[in-house]
Every structure is written in C-alpha cells, then in structure tokens.
Amino acid sequence: MKSAIQSLTKHPDIYLGNANSSSQQGIERLPLGIETLDSALAGGIPRAGLSRIRCGVGSGELQLLQAIFNPLIHQGKKILWIYGYYRINPVWLARQQLIEHSWLITPSTSQQALWACEQCIRSQACSLIVYSFDTLDVRAARRLQVLSKQYQCLVLNVDYTRHSLATLPVNIDCELYLQGEQWFIDVHRVVGSWPKAGIRLSNPLPASNEAIQSAMLQTSTLHETSLTAS
Image (cartoon, rainbow, N blue to C red; front, side, top):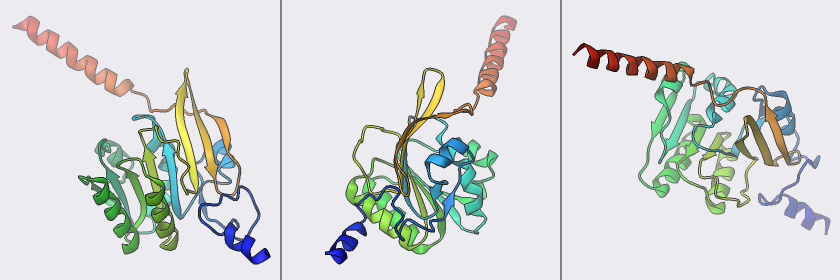
C-alpha cells in the first residue's frame, strides 16, 4: 500500500503543495527581486521546468520577469522567443542587452511552435524559452514540463489570452492584472508552497509611457508648424 501511494505522488499531475518530500527539496529557484512575490513563490521561479504567467498585452510582464534573464544568459546559452499573434519589442530586447543572446521565431501554426520548442529543449542550446504562441493544452504542457525538467531548461509560457482556466502540470501558474491603479498578481499554483492571491506590486507596471507621449507630442507640433508655414 505504501509503495502504491509513493508511486501516485510521483505522478506529474499530482500537486503536492508544500509537502516536504524529497521531490520538493533542493529545487534551484530564480528570484524576481520582489520580496513579497518571491516569498509566495517559495523563493522564486524554479530553474527547470514549465511555468505560466497569464496577463494582458502590455502588462509589463517582461519587466517583471527581467531579473531572471541575466543569470541564465551568463551560462553561455540562448534565450528563445516563440511568438505568434503578438510580437516581442526589439527595442526592449536591445535596452536589456538581450539582442545578441536571443533567437526569435514566429511559427505559422501551433504544431510548428510546439515542435520548435521541444527541439530547442532537446538540443540544450537554450537556457530559457519564452513561449507565447497560443494557449497550451494539458497534453502539450505535460510534454514540455517533462522535457524541460529532463534537460534542465526553463520554459515560460506567457499566455495573453487569459481565457483558459484549465489547471496545467506546471511549476508556477500566476496571473498579472491591474485593478484600479494598483497592479496585483495571483499565484494559482506553486510547487513547494500554497496558492496566494492579491499580491501587491509596488513597482509601476508597465513602464512609464512618458517618452512615447513626448515623442508623439513633438511630432504633432512639427506637423502643425509645417502646415502653418506652408
């Protein structure tokens, strides 16, 4: 009976919460640099495996996650960005000095996106894969979870649809959202701890748009001056 229970708890779909089993101990984690959030994540995002963040487009999710990028690129491996309907901002990549450490692919179908993700995990050429092509189903998530743990790769699924409430076999499942003028994050699932909702983020997210607004205002002024002069 004991061996049967032990076999059951090793199944990837069984969530163990903060159980102090051997499978939960010694997990290398990458802190995000926000004390309250890192505490809720039991120290940070696990270094290997699949984690998911649900958010709206332009929520500052990459700014929130940027603390984990530098430790990974120092391993001499690449960051792979798999984007579909939305595009990663190359200006942001350049400002974070990630251009030379990144590969960006835009597959045509979800099958191609998953195939590319799996092949890059197996090649061990990437330390981090940011997958934001479409919403993962349970079967695809399970495959990515097993592979990424096996090859010690971190896969971050950035889900912009926010429509899927399905529980996936992931290390971290969290949701970033704006309520009023305050940003919050709900941790729906975290390996090694328990879910926690309503974590306040004190840093302003997304980043200030003052530079964009200023550039647009200058452009408008130049346009009006040109019309007046003519």
